[in-house]
Image (cartoon, rainbow, N blue to C red):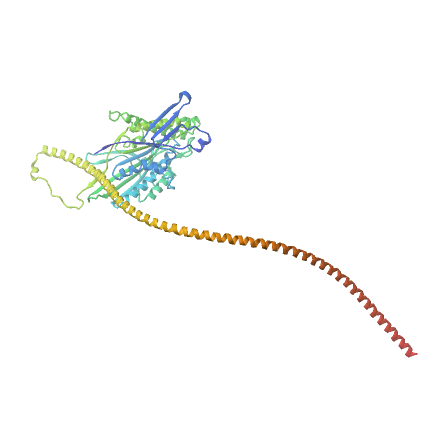
Length: 558
């Protein structure tokens, strides 16, 4: 059975860029997270217009990636695991942070966008023991210049021929289903679906797809996305319920990063590259069609039987189930605070405001299997019915089809009820366990507090005794310091006197040394004179002896 669900619309206001701050650009868009309102001021003086818009949630530049995920996708993950098809898409002008919100920095746990966070949350929940079997696949579709592209295909993107052949195989088709079997709805035939076993596999696929996605530099954004991208996680699971029954679900989560709108003036006018201008026109055309669809749905055109232009664009055709269809949908509108983008910001907020009133008839793709033990139940068929006439048989077939449809609806309703009861039961059990745990913690805390009081009193007494001991030691130390200072003063005086006397002795010693040196010099001179005299006397003695010997010789000869 289908249930009505309104589209959740949130707005994220990005901070001023460095270029806007350097250029002193005037911020004219403000937002309040508490009031969930966005205010736009346009014009100056008496012609100033102040427009305020209210939404389901509003995020500012102070909001973190985690806060955005917790308020938008975190509740949707439970719906996906319950068998619902859900869609989240970012809408806004180029350069307002759509790709940052959807993808972010996949290598940073803090700055990851909603897509990688959704992958981590899905696998975290599937790790619960109640899930006995699960299978997750991922696909990444690109719509560039109204052409479908598969970002996960195994074709070399440098081989244009092979790439074009692959793109020709992609077809946007619809499977409406039958009275007894739910169809796939609108999907892309031949789109690659990669099985993933963990969040890291999803991050690798995102990195591979990001390298292949069409991006380009514009006046508004150096790395502007020039294509619409749809990342889809398909989750099949089997879960054992507390009553022993088993619930099988097939849920899908579509996360759409739309290319940013850009007016001709902002794009550069007549000087823009023709290829870039073609991209801009195709992007704006598809977004314009999206706006017309939202406007007609808001005005109740679907209920009035009016034509909704889903088929005028591949984007709106693909989002048909998300806008007035059977999906649960969340729209994240991104706006810039700059006055240079005030017209685009107003247009984005008006489209987002229009989406607030759109209602979807959501359906869960789940089934509860009873009698999982395999025991055969007794048949209630009446053998006498074999002779029924053809008319009775036709009526019986009609009734059987009706009952089969009712049975499927009942099974889906039962699955939802089981899910709700299971959730309530788990919450009650967790609450009871938490109460018991908190009671034990309170008792332990009280005992610990008493023990801490005793320990604190003992520590205080020990600290007081220690303080008194330290005071006594301090007095002793002061006396010792005073005594030491006295001794040091006496020692310094003694050293001063000894130094003075030593200097006097050194002066006297220097004088004595000088006198000794003078005396030594005189004695040395006297010694030299005496040596000279002795040498002369010896020479004289030798010559006298020689003369006497010569005389004696002469006398003897005579």
